Amino acid sequence: MRVLVTGGNGFIGSHVVRRLREAGHDVRVLAQPGTSLRAIEDTGARVLWGDLRVPHSLLAATDGVEVVCHLAARVGDHGPASEYFEVNAVGTRRLVEAARRTGVRRVVLVSTLAVHRLHGRGIADGDEDRPRDHVAMPYARSKILAEDEVMRAHAAGHVEGVVVRPGLFPFGPHDRTTFLPLVRHLDRYAHVNGGRAVFCTAYAENLAHGIALAAEHPAAAGRVYVIADEGRPTWRDLMDRVCDLLRRPRIRRSIPLGPALAAAAACEAWSALTGRPPLLTRYRVRVAGLHCWFSSRRARDELGYSPLVDLDEGLRRTVAWVRTVA
Image (cartoon, rainbow, N blue to C red; front, side, top):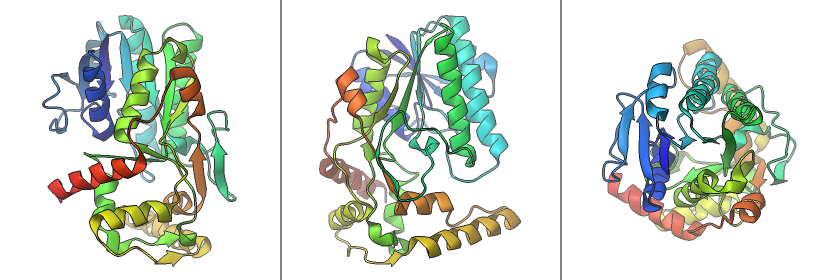
């Protein structure tokens, strides 16, 4: 197939590009002007410069393409709602319209588990059918709207729509947004509620494998899938393994959920007054302190998905990469 990967030069996108190239597909990458191509420079993928806010660039990128894997997005837990809406919701609408006009068969949207609101004790056994109720957070709300755009086009028969929600903690080589800063600031890290919350990870190679299956498998049309690793680690489990690999002392600092949420609310108020990014947000606190585990059972049953790399090996590879860039 000829496949377009939007955001294919980013962290997860670069792994998707490699996976698709290994499977023999002809891969195009839609990259935003000014962004680095170093993660895909040896893949043989064709790079097209474009932007979700520029419709004519999307028409050019989708022309002659059979499948689009849509990863380009504005990601984060703070910032103006208008920016998330313009890039994630309106940008996806423009991409789906371009796909319809150029005859693309399937659009695979990579979404997020943030569409589900964490409250109470969290979600300890989630699946794709849980309500998408996290409408107060601009990023999550914009991704709900993006999912709606893809599935609306599917229902209308314009394209085959597929939605993939990665495990809560995607990680792997080339992750300069989450894992690398985490390692560099271990001395600041503290568990919330003792790090006892269970959650699901998504090692990049496993996630790319799942996204490729969603692009290729006939059964995926019109479906939503969680793609995550095996196991039910707690945050303490994960951080202990990371510290051990780095030969650093295990983290014992912990903050109760209530005071952590109060501190995060104060940080968000300070951010609103100064315009600077908050040091902590309530979303990050809830993610660290409440359960957020979702099953990949549907992807296993319908797509034949099975993780290629276990958690320990994924962490080992990621830490080895960190050592090359730290």
